Image (cartoon, rainbow, N blue to C red; front, side):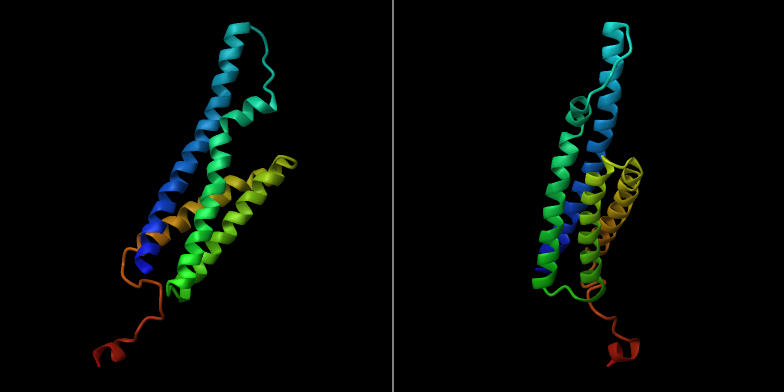
Length: 153
């Protein structure tokens, strides 16, 4: 199961990077639609909520899939013998994903809350990258390190 954990951590890291790309697409899609509408009509353009949400559809939907993937990683860790710091960090990652969803939901009502959505995303990128990169080393962060005296015996 530890091998499954390592591979799944890499899949999640790649998914999180893709998710950042979806966010960028959503932002530039809105600007593109605003510019195109302005050139076509030669007047001021009002962007509706639907126009903005259409560009972020992939970002929103994929975010929920990542959340489910992180829950699966936590289950794999718990039943697969992953212990110690790595299990705690996997739980922290799941908590950051819950926070990320809440920041997105409440950010629509209070933009200052939305400010923290991309900041939290940076933490998620860093933590998934850490788990993926350190997960390729056998048992890294899984157990309490063995002292050098005990290892010599």
